[in-house]
Structure formats: C-alpha cells, structure tokens
Length: 282
Image (cartoon, rainbow, N blue to C red; front, top):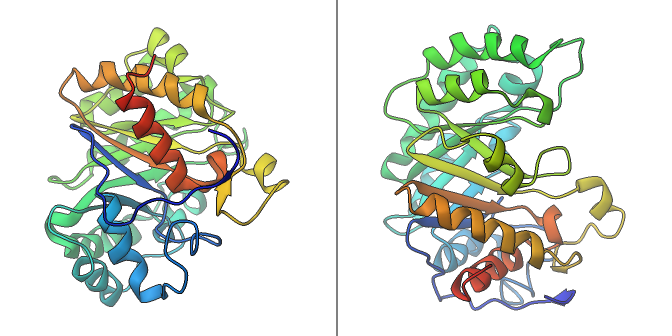
C-alpha cells in the first residue's frame, strides 16, 4: 500500500472468522477526516468505530483505572458482541512491577468487570527492564509466577515482554500452566513471528493476542499526526497472515490490534491485513 491518506467505510463491519480485529484506542490526532467523517464529535467516535471493528484495545487504562461512568458509556455506545481489551495500569507493570499492588490490580479488574459480556482480554504490558530491576529473564519469571497464581478466574489475561533474550521454555510453560496468553508483538526488539514460531510454541492459552506496534521513535521522527500511512507494511503483514492462518487452524481465538505507530494509521493497517488475508496472503 502506498503512503497517503485512506478513507475507510464506516458502517461496513470488517470480519474474519476466528479473528477479532481492531486498533489500539478508538481516536487519535488525524482520524477525523481520514477514518471518521469530517465534523464528527468526540461523543460519536466509539459508536462509529464499533460499526467497523468488533473490538478495541483501550490504551487509556494504562495510565489509570477508568471511572465507572466511563465504563458505562463504553458499554452503552457499542453493540452486543463488541469486546474491549484493556491494558493493566502501569502502576502495576512499570512502577510496582507486580509487588504490593494487589489492591490496585483488583480495583482495576472489578471496574472492568462492569463491562459484563463486553470485557475481553486484559493485557500486562511490561517494558524492557534494565538489569537493576531483573538480572535475567529467570528472575522475571520467578516474580511473575506467584502473581499469575492469584489471577481471578473467569478472565482472559495476556502478558507482553519486550526482551527477546527472556523468551524461554520455562517462560512459555508458566504462561501455559496458568492459561495466560503470550502477546505476539511486531516490534524491533522482538523476533519476527516466523522466527518465533520456529523456536517456540508461543500459543499458551485458548486465545492469542497480537499487537502491531512498530518503532515509535522512528515514526514520530516523521509524523505525530495519525491520519495517513507513512510506512509500507505490506510484507510484514503478509508474514503475519501466514503465521495466523496456522494459528487459526488450532481453533484458537485471535485478537489483533494495530497501533498508529506501526505504519502511521491504525485503521489502515487493519484494513491492509484483512485485504491480504482475503487475497490468500503468502
């Protein structure tokens, strides 16, 4: 796909069997006029978004647990069957790093539970830790193990790490033991999906969680307005199509979300993935 603006038809639901496709957040600078019609007000964003996609990854929960009034508005503005994935607040993953944070965590989960049937997976997005925090991936696994044992039942959780040297059989075994999904991310610090699947079995739960993230620093050097494609990601997405076709055959539910930083315009990334999938991929 060439760089440039793209207009996506609001009102036509994008659907692939076994895959829920969406973006990271449902609004960004540049989306009005490129994704939402000109003149769209903020109160209309989510309702229009849900006409095109059947899931969204909520980014704002990374900063804080949302108010109950916000949760109720989200539920009211979306149709039956729509699912919200959400990031666990960074006080848990970045500041306290799973230590003495059960109060904050359970407050978050209880609040998100108010979405009822519209609650999708909850993501622990961990950063790249320096060796002052963890000397090794093994130390991280030992910190993670007791926390995962206390996860509340009846929820779907995913774990994202950003250090390829921490990928190991014990790490994946722990996630599999607890039924927690490993987040498959397209990020410069992590292996390409084909390489990852050649080395490990990263499907550790009844669902998998895909994030097309890209290189934030690189793309923000080119733009900070997210209304058009800046980076051609056709070959990368074709690779993802090939990998996820195999995952789909395992009868594993797939959630996949595109960040604006991946190519410049999250909705266009999802649109391109669906187009490649429909064309057979590679």
